[in-house]
Image (cartoon, rainbow, N blue to C red; front, side, top):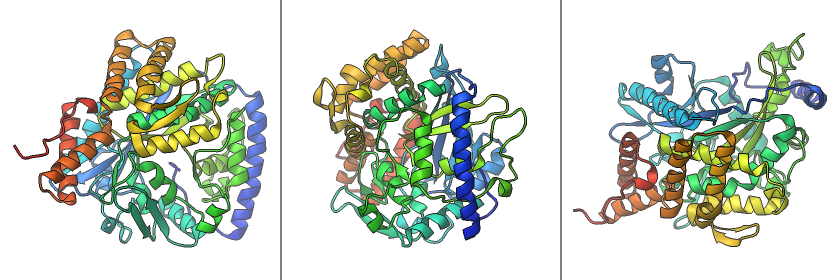
Length: 498
């Protein structure tokens, strides 16, 4: 859904034609996947979504369009919310100092955007949910960034659903239970998306491994405990994203119709399985044909563009999404890992990337794959539990049984990920740096979510209101980002004023 489109409304005949072209794209992709040569360099890429907050209130700052004009840098683009900003980092490789270079690139990208924001009285906040968002922000449409694709997406989601968007998320008290006449809550979800280039013959193993490890991965990185003033899941982005883009009325959900934000339901044997499922199970949201986009299907000497298939794939939000990129010369395939929140610091985010790339490197080469020793339902359950409880979650793991996920990470998964980085050729000092950050985070139980919860609790015990505590916590969060210290080393204020 990163590309712009030319219309926000579509006729029935356009939808029928799009369905036919989508099937044609799928057939062409199947044969192309079996016969074509793909780039196989094992490169990695990162997309980082960030929030904008006004100083000193830390309320959302609706100025992303102004900042993009100020910076005039094609690496920075709109996200759906006018208080969001996305930056695309250069393609790199985890060998040598690549991960430390990624940390430096993240630091530079955040600093550049933050300098532009400060010139307009705001700050960049790399965090899963901006804690100061209120329901009032989503009245009207001033929250939404300009762009036909965002307007079209909202219109088609609401049209398919036939009623308001409901957010019902368990948490403190009665949790959150409210409705919206837009998909605005989706804009509250800001993430760090990791890309891994994968050859066709290895894609199924890489995707299965990413699904199997999703629970521990999200527990380690959780950073989104507050939404609309409520303390909810440790990674509240997960249920928020599912519900904000849910095209199903409740009756369809009760019948087992799949949501468009989806973990999946089975291990795969080929990348094609995922594209086939997308076409078979999900109607088109944005039925813009290649003729409307003025994009050919086939050009001599080039890979097929597959406009309809790629556009459709961009409107099924798998937590691990398959990507086909025709490129300019030779095509390539990528795994896009979408379940991580933004933040807290570049060091933390680079450590999260080190864990993901390292654990996949190790898992795809196991003689008896992890996913052959656990059911898909077990992986899904671990993902849900870890999103809700973070490092405090308990999971059932092959050869281990029930275990605290923090212990599983310290004893098994983090060391295994570091061995995977050695296989990839990462420098030893780089491995040592990120192993220490990850291990200390698991040992202390302090990820971004835990720090936010503990800080808000302390500030409230000092006599502050929830609104005041969230604003002050966000100010302290930004100051800690400036320090560069990883989140496990952040201090929590005393529960009584000194």
